[in-house]
Amino acid sequence: MESWTLVISFTILLFGVFFFKKLWLSALVAILVFILSKAFLLTSIEFIYLPFLSGTLISFELGLLLFGAYLFYNTLYTNHHFSEFIQVTSSFSSRLFIIISLCLFMGSFMEGIAGFGIPAMLIAPLLITLGFKPLTSIVLPLAANTTAVTFGALGTPLKVGLNIYESDSTVVFTLLLNSLPAITLPFLLAYIYSKTEQTDIQWTKNWKMLLGAGFSFTVPYFITGFLSIEYPSVVAGIVGLILFFAFNVSKSENPSYSFWLKTFYPYLILTLFLFIAKYFLSDFTWNLQEGSRSISLYQPGIIFIISSITYLMFIDKNNLAKQFYNQSRDTLCRTFKSVAAICLLVFLAQLIQQDLSVVIRNYYAELLPIVKVIASPFLGIMGSFISGSATMSNILLGSAIIVNEINGGNLPIFLALLHTGSAIGNAISLQNILMVKSVVNQPHIGYAQIFKFNFLLVGIYSAVIILVSLLIINH
Image 1 (tube, rainbow, N blue to C red):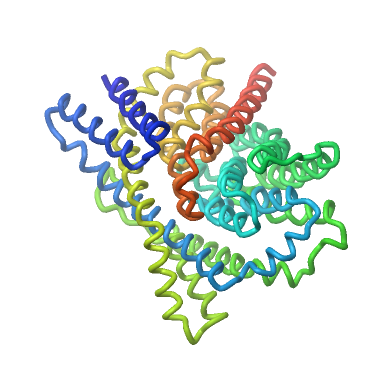
Image 2: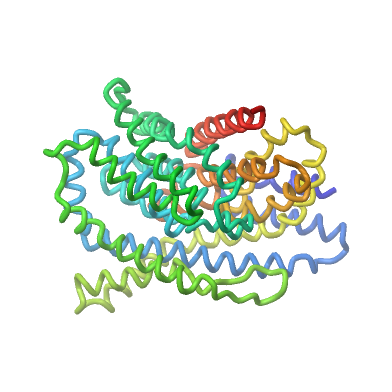
């Protein structure tokens, strides 16, 4: 019966998104249908309490994050911080180079430090200020935020999601599975860019740059992964960006170091605050009730707000209070509806997670090994699609795989497949899409338009990791 309840809820959610284009409405109806179905079966509604409590806490964190991220960007944009950056980068001979630099390398660096959907929320509005189309600015940061999520937020999806704290066999398989897709990711981004911008890529001219971008990211990602689960994405982002510029930008186009410092010093301040806060505060958590979601003292949304205030102190200390009030009011008006929709989506994910775990556990045990190879990444993708988080996806589904494979020799690779799928799923997560759309204020762009491109990337990425995993198992 649980499976039918889940199928009906998912059908309502997807139908509402793609046909009525109202995520909040479809999520609300799916929640009501699920609650009524469960209440009829259990003749009680006590099952709502813990999901509601956990959903409220998660919604608070995500709402704070969305508010803080938009406030940070809005503060920079309103004070014309990107004027010189737009002027200089607009003169680059290759706009594709800008896409790869920001979406792949800067996005990976931010994902490695902070996670929480932050990279796409920061990169997307920056692309719009550079003159890229809104669809490009939404799709590409989401598409690029895949490989880096495997070690995002200083390894949180592995540490919290799978209880892995050091490089082990699961981490090694994760590196092996993702290295080939990481090399080809710039080519996929270029293809999507050509479609969203309706421009010719000139592959014969750009293939060396794209291949160089892939190796510039993958080599430090792979090497660092053997040493630590916290820094592969961080190192791949920053070291990869340096290598990418060193080998692909002519001296005549390469801006001075002072230009880069002037442009990105607010991000450096943000990164420093995030790193310090995560190091000192992430271990301090409160659990309001046993079985519910704990809440951490480390809140990236607050760090965004602090970074915005710090930036205003540098540029306009005398009008700090007035500027902060105006930017906060504008941010609240722009993000209120999105936060409400996110709350409903999070509540739905919390309601269904127990039934979903039971259903998967029961069906997964009956699958043949070769089918499990195919099913594991798609379970991860589905988990992120629903929850909007690789960490939540691993928590939601990892136990089902561990219970079924604990005595088998293939547990590490099945966990690596699930974990990789959870990372890939960020590109099509309803929650992440909603948050990015809200930050760039482009409500007219439908979910179907975004899925049209990112489903292609997810499909190719999944096919590659499945092929690689089959080769590993057979040898």
